[in-house]
Amino acid sequence: MSTIDPTIRVGTNPPIATHGLNGQSRLAVHLLRAAEALALVAFLSFCVLWVQWQSAAPGVSRLSGDFVSFWTAGQLALEGHAAEAYARAPHLLRQLALHHDPTWGYLAFFYPPFFLLPCAGLALLGYFPALSVWLAAGVASYAAVLRELAPKDRRQARNAWVVLLGYPAVMVNAGFGQNGFLSTALFGGAAMWLDRRPALAGICLGCLAYKPQLDLIVPLGLALAGRWRCFAAAGATVLVLAAAATVAFGGDIWPAFFAGMAEARRDWMEPANPLYLQYLITVYGAVRLHGGPLMLAYAAQAIVAAAAAVMLAHALLRRPADMRSGRAEMAAIAACVPLCSPFLLEYDLVILAVPMIWLLGEALRDGFRRGEGLALAGAYLAPVLFKATLFDGALKLGVIVAAALLFTAVLRRMAEPVRPASTASWRKTRPATMPSAQRSVSASL
Image 1 (cartoon, rainbow, N blue to C red):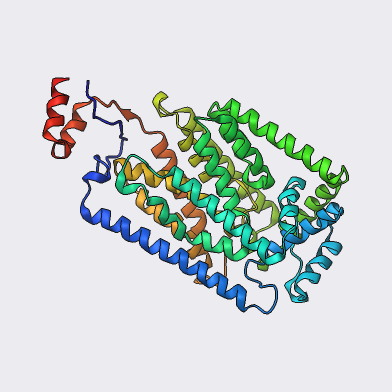
Image 2: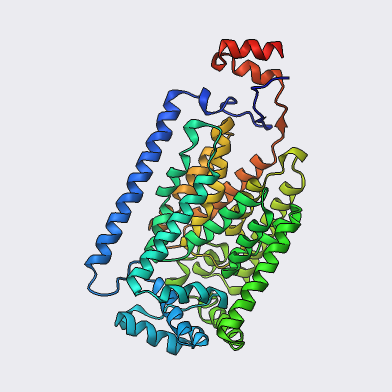
């Protein structure tokens, strides 16, 4: 038996390097360090610019302006008129009273009633302090879960999570003032706790029901993975949240919510409105934006979602017995989300940070497989590609392709077998890194 040989994962495709980051060239280490430094500079620069842009605005800035919908809905809830958050006229009037600019248009609120609870808490503050708290808390949660998910068994890779501070979707989400950080923190929290504390993971996934379109594939993924304690905790969390919203806002909040959902489908989801569809990152949005009929858009989305669900099921069910990993499972489920929902916008791409940090950690641990670098680079740059105007303002199909490549790479890595720690092939790859005294002890054992 050996006291020093770690477990190493191998697959049918040979890795570029089978001995982890410590055995790679110094150039690779320097490139990683450079990427971390550039990402940190980009993130901090954006923070400084965000403060300057907000300060320069004469009133309420359009930057991070989607938060106006959350804050005014919270105001209505605090005043005992929570149901009016789902009605266009009173909600729009409250927004106009805040920014005094009729050219903004209406920022609708279509979230389940329990999302009004944090919105009401934020509305206790003034608008700009509330916005600052919303984004600062979101970024802190985002960074905390990525830091926890980063590999801990390779010294050079422990700070790899910093690269994802510069992920362009971070700036996009902050620029909209949206909830991508919260969604990512909930996915990341579930990945952190699924193995050790499945009930806490279930609470995270239950809270994710504040945005139901992100939760579509989650129940199936948990069931296929046999994560029944997490499944039950998630269901119980949704029931508790629904009960809390009913107690806080009254039973009439639910008819108002369902009426708002019908309005969202009729007035926002299904009209052929390129000004709105251009923000969708889904197959459904691509078909509609390019003039496809409604039924074709739904059919195309259903086909892609079904194919992704089958791939996820196949990977989860055929995993080797020693590859049961909550982090891998949540990475796969999060990577599947953009392929399953018809209604996702560009700021929702932030959730891909969870599968990216997991895949990057695995690659830094025992070498990149063929195509993994391309998948990571494509997913990382997808928000930038989406903003490009090379195709006459059309939705960039490259974003969907990048999400599919990342999903495929995560599934392939998750399904790899594990080589026993005592195999001779590992020892042959590490003779130069093993101290002589330690080799003597290992040989004697």
